[in-house]
Length: 132
Image (cartoon, rainbow, N blue to C red):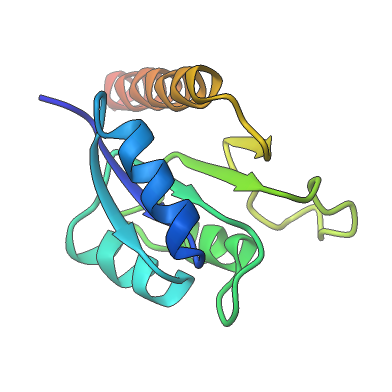
């Protein structure tokens, strides 16, 4: 079974491009903004969340913060894909994504990064389960 990726991207063109690029290796779900992405993640948790950063309303950083605040989603890997570098002015306590990729991203690299964060998340989940 393919891992489920939720693509949160405000640009229809980019959202569909990502969906098409990733659909060979992932079961893709899409959301047009952070609000819809959070609702979708809560209703049907994906294996990994792929989000744009600069969106109206809930931006990627706020989406990441809200996801990490949800007990059912706290271990959900988050990957940002943005045309801008990471913000340097973030509060150190602010949750960070598991990976931050700056556009343009070559498809093989994006796919490899998604698999890498999934591997790390599975390892951390298994380790946490073994500690109980």
